[in-house]
Image 1 (tube, rainbow, N blue to C red):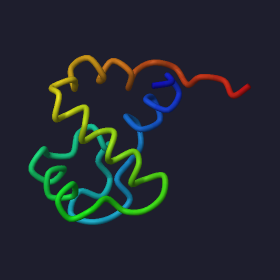
Image 2 (cartoon, one colour):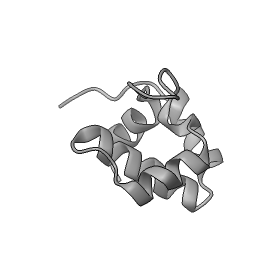
Image 3 (cartoon, one colour):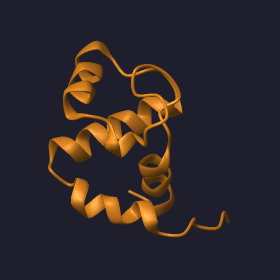
Image 4 (tube, rainbow, N blue to C red):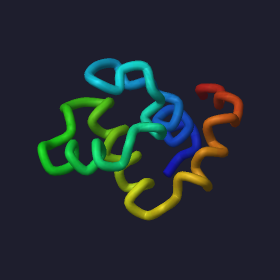
Length: 76
């Protein structure tokens, strides 16, 4: 996993629904399980939600939460 992709996923804000306005990493685990069962949305947001689901499933939130405070990587 490349740093910029992880950093972006961790800092992405949920754009719709009950949890609109929360960072994806801070979405409740039951909601992530529900999304996993019912299907993540198409596109980049769905990929980011799937990544966050795997992070939560494997108990890596504490480790990954540090990525939320890292500076943005420059695009090359």
